Image 1 (cartoon, one colour):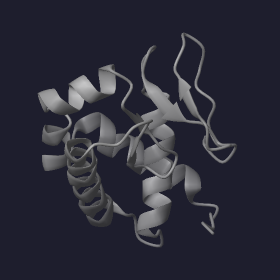
Image 2 (image 1 turned 180 degrees about the horizontal axis):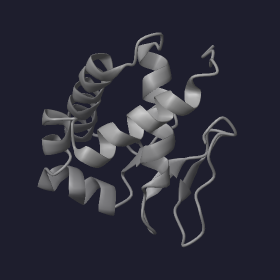
Image 3 (image 1 turned 60 degrees about the horizontal axis):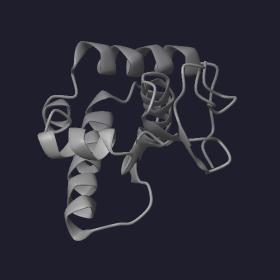
Length: 131
């Protein structure tokens, strides 16, 4: 269970800054990988509320390796960037809120109920704890 303190807004802002400024380093580079972009465009992968990438539908060894590689890099970035008093899981969740918000029409994301959705022009469904 993820517990949130009154500092969640500060944490969300830090996670947003991490994403916007590209401080994810190698994770950001991995996400520019043509295989990642192809999987994202094809709806094979999507953003999850926990801040990690998920596989939508059928899994292949290559797709699992791609997702695992990106998620390992994301966790390393979250670990480096977690604000004082925040856990890696809290920082990852705040990042997940932002990553889902940043999806574009046609991309997949996981709704709060666990189902995979395709982003439309409307705002994505996000966890009520996202600000």
